[in-house]
Image (cartoon, rainbow, N blue to C red; front, side, top):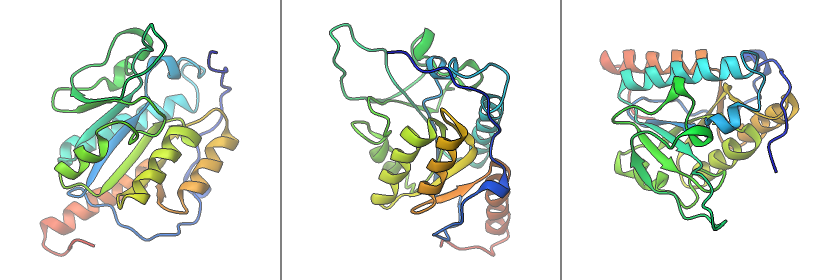
Amino acid sequence: MGLPAIESYPMPDRSALPAPHVTWTIAPERAALLIHGMQNQFIDAFPAGCSPVRELVENIAALRELAGALGMPAVFSAEPAAPRHGSRRPGNATRGAPGPDGTAVVERLAPRPGEHLLRNVRPNAFLRSHLGRLLRSQGRDQLIVCGLYAHLGILLTAADAAMNDIQPFVVADAVADFSAEEHSMALRWVARSGVVRTTDGLVRELLLHRERRDTGSNGRA
């Protein structure tokens, strides 16, 4: 069964962020960026050039550039093409570009050398993949989560992170969903066990933390 057509809706702004239940502070030396499900087969369900997909791609691109500048690992999770026999195998952590056509990450965000690509077979990017191992191996206990879909992969991945002592930071205007209602619902649920920020807000926090660290006025929380 194909994906439903998704109607345009406005991205949430700062005024739409749910009240936080935790007070974590993002730190570049502790964080990794997860770009989840940004594949042609999913993006094509949105109206091209309209909200929310326009802001979705632009904001993720900005976060990805900042991650590179601050030395944060960038990790992509993408569904593999369904095998002909109808079953799926567990995803593995690899490096390089994804497969062609619908399963490829959108061209603007295509993985670069040194970035990680995880083949995930469930909406939860941790499930049956090496994401947890990858984060531990690089000493990362914070995860910035963006991509598709807010009430599925984003929510499930953030919840799994929180249950495994990894602090999730979900970027409200760098995720999207089937509707504004589902998008908003997902952010409210994430806020119960994680942090919800806008792209601009998170960028400011990351740069401020680096400035304080460089001047010796900030320690690990």
